[in-house]
Length: 166
Image (cartoon, rainbow, N blue to C red; front, top):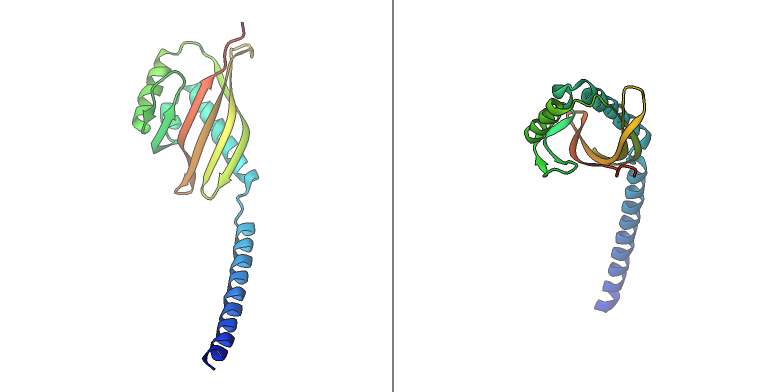
Protein backbone atom coordinates (compact mmCIF):
# COMPACT_ATOMS: atom_id res chain seq x y z
CA UNK A 1 0.00 0.00 0.00
CA UNK A 2 2.82 2.43 0.84
CA UNK A 3 4.56 1.84 -2.52
CA UNK A 4 1.32 2.67 -4.32
CA UNK A 5 1.16 6.08 -2.62
CA UNK A 6 4.84 6.86 -3.21
CA UNK A 7 4.80 6.06 -6.91
CA UNK A 8 2.21 8.73 -7.86
CA UNK A 9 4.03 11.27 -5.68
CA UNK A 10 7.36 10.36 -7.26
CA UNK A 11 5.86 10.53 -10.76
CA UNK A 12 4.36 13.97 -10.02
CA UNK A 13 7.71 15.20 -8.65
CA UNK A 14 9.57 13.98 -11.76
CA UNK A 15 7.04 15.69 -14.05
CA UNK A 16 7.32 18.98 -12.13
CA UNK A 17 11.13 18.79 -12.12
CA UNK A 18 11.20 18.00 -15.87
CA UNK A 19 8.91 20.92 -16.65
CA UNK A 20 11.10 23.23 -14.55
CA UNK A 21 14.28 22.07 -16.29
CA UNK A 22 12.76 22.56 -19.74
CA UNK A 23 11.63 26.05 -18.73
CA UNK A 24 15.11 26.90 -17.42
CA UNK A 25 16.73 25.63 -20.62
CA UNK A 26 14.34 27.68 -22.77
CA UNK A 27 14.99 30.77 -20.63
CA UNK A 28 18.77 30.26 -20.82
CA UNK A 29 18.58 29.84 -24.60
CA UNK A 30 16.50 33.02 -24.91
CA UNK A 31 18.86 34.98 -22.65
CA UNK A 32 21.90 33.78 -24.59
CA UNK A 33 20.30 34.78 -27.87
CA UNK A 34 19.38 38.24 -26.58
CA UNK A 35 22.66 38.95 -24.81
CA UNK A 36 25.00 38.12 -27.68
CA UNK A 37 27.55 40.88 -28.10
CA UNK A 38 27.16 43.28 -31.00
CA UNK A 39 30.41 42.53 -32.83
CA UNK A 40 29.86 45.30 -35.38
CA UNK A 41 29.59 47.86 -32.59
CA UNK A 42 32.59 46.38 -30.76
CA UNK A 43 34.62 46.53 -33.99
CA UNK A 44 33.66 50.15 -34.61
CA UNK A 45 34.57 51.07 -31.03
CA UNK A 46 37.95 49.32 -31.28
CA UNK A 47 38.72 50.85 -34.69
CA UNK A 48 38.03 54.31 -33.22
CA UNK A 49 40.39 53.54 -30.34
CA UNK A 50 43.07 52.48 -32.83
CA UNK A 51 42.67 55.80 -34.68
CA UNK A 52 43.16 57.62 -31.36
CA UNK A 53 46.14 55.37 -30.63
CA UNK A 54 47.79 56.15 -33.97
CA UNK A 55 47.15 59.88 -33.57
CA UNK A 56 48.68 59.83 -30.08
CA UNK A 57 51.77 57.94 -31.33
CA UNK A 58 52.20 60.18 -34.37
CA UNK A 59 51.93 63.35 -32.25
CA UNK A 60 53.95 61.81 -29.41
CA UNK A 61 51.07 62.73 -27.11
CA UNK A 62 51.93 60.68 -24.04
CA UNK A 63 48.92 61.78 -21.97
CA UNK A 64 46.46 60.88 -24.73
CA UNK A 65 48.14 57.53 -25.26
CA UNK A 66 48.05 56.73 -21.55
CA UNK A 67 44.33 57.59 -21.40
CA UNK A 68 43.71 54.48 -23.52
CA UNK A 69 45.18 52.15 -20.87
CA UNK A 70 43.69 50.88 -17.62
CA UNK A 71 45.76 51.54 -14.50
CA UNK A 72 46.42 47.80 -14.15
CA UNK A 73 47.31 47.23 -17.81
CA UNK A 74 50.08 44.82 -18.76
CA UNK A 75 52.14 45.21 -21.94
CA UNK A 76 54.16 42.51 -23.65
CA UNK A 77 56.24 44.79 -25.83
CA UNK A 78 58.47 43.80 -28.72
CA UNK A 79 61.97 42.82 -27.49
CA UNK A 80 61.29 44.12 -24.00
CA UNK A 81 60.48 42.79 -20.55
CA UNK A 82 56.83 42.59 -19.49
CA UNK A 83 55.51 45.95 -18.27
CA UNK A 84 53.05 45.82 -15.37
CA UNK A 85 50.85 48.84 -14.78
CA UNK A 86 50.17 52.10 -16.55
CA UNK A 87 53.15 53.85 -14.95
CA UNK A 88 55.61 51.24 -16.25
CA UNK A 89 54.08 51.54 -19.72
CA UNK A 90 54.24 55.34 -19.49
CA UNK A 91 57.93 55.26 -18.56
CA UNK A 92 58.84 53.03 -21.52
CA UNK A 93 56.69 55.02 -23.94
CA UNK A 94 58.21 58.32 -22.80
CA UNK A 95 61.68 56.89 -23.43
CA UNK A 96 60.56 55.59 -26.85
CA UNK A 97 59.19 59.03 -27.79
CA UNK A 98 62.37 60.75 -26.63
CA UNK A 99 64.65 58.48 -28.66
CA UNK A 100 62.53 58.23 -31.83
CA UNK A 101 63.84 60.43 -34.63
CA UNK A 102 62.40 58.34 -37.47
CA UNK A 103 59.27 60.44 -38.05
CA UNK A 104 57.44 57.31 -39.20
CA UNK A 105 53.66 57.54 -39.35
CA UNK A 106 51.76 54.80 -37.51
CA UNK A 107 48.47 53.27 -38.55
CA UNK A 108 46.62 50.17 -37.41
CA UNK A 109 44.39 47.72 -39.23
CA UNK A 110 41.92 45.73 -37.17
CA UNK A 111 41.80 42.15 -38.41
CA UNK A 112 39.49 40.36 -35.96
CA UNK A 113 37.34 41.34 -32.99
CA UNK A 114 35.96 38.94 -30.41
CA UNK A 115 33.65 40.09 -27.64
CA UNK A 116 32.06 38.63 -24.53
CA UNK A 117 30.27 40.72 -21.97
CA UNK A 118 32.30 43.87 -21.24
CA UNK A 119 35.52 42.55 -22.79
CA UNK A 120 36.82 42.78 -26.35
CA UNK A 121 39.85 41.08 -27.90
CA UNK A 122 41.32 42.56 -31.06
CA UNK A 123 43.99 41.26 -33.41
CA UNK A 124 45.53 43.56 -35.95
CA UNK A 125 48.38 44.81 -38.09
CA UNK A 126 50.70 47.73 -37.44
CA UNK A 127 51.91 49.73 -40.43
CA UNK A 128 54.64 52.40 -40.25
CA UNK A 129 55.29 54.60 -43.26
CA UNK A 130 57.83 57.29 -44.03
CA UNK A 131 56.89 60.84 -45.08
CA UNK A 132 56.55 59.77 -48.73
CA UNK A 133 54.02 57.08 -47.80
CA UNK A 134 56.35 54.13 -48.31
CA UNK A 135 55.80 51.29 -45.86
CA UNK A 136 58.97 50.91 -43.80
CA UNK A 137 57.92 48.51 -41.07
CA UNK A 138 54.97 46.26 -40.31
CA UNK A 139 53.97 44.23 -37.30
CA UNK A 140 51.09 42.54 -35.54
CA UNK A 141 49.37 42.88 -32.21
CA UNK A 142 46.69 41.62 -29.89
CA UNK A 143 44.89 44.03 -27.58
CA UNK A 144 42.48 43.02 -24.84
CA UNK A 145 40.04 45.73 -23.76
CA UNK A 146 37.62 45.93 -20.87
CA UNK A 147 34.78 48.41 -20.52
CA UNK A 148 35.29 50.44 -17.35
CA UNK A 149 33.06 53.39 -16.49
CA UNK A 150 31.53 53.14 -19.97
CA UNK A 151 34.86 53.29 -21.84
CA UNK A 152 36.92 50.49 -23.38
CA UNK A 153 40.43 50.54 -21.92
CA UNK A 154 43.39 48.40 -22.87
CA UNK A 155 44.14 45.92 -20.09
CA UNK A 156 46.59 43.68 -21.98
CA UNK A 157 48.56 44.13 -25.16
CA UNK A 158 51.15 42.13 -27.04
CA UNK A 159 52.92 43.34 -30.14
CA UNK A 160 55.96 42.67 -32.27
CA UNK A 161 57.48 43.65 -35.58
CA UNK A 162 57.47 41.49 -38.66
CA UNK A 163 60.83 40.28 -39.92
CA UNK A 164 62.41 42.69 -42.38
CA UNK A 165 62.51 41.53 -45.98
CA UNK A 166 65.92 40.24 -47.04
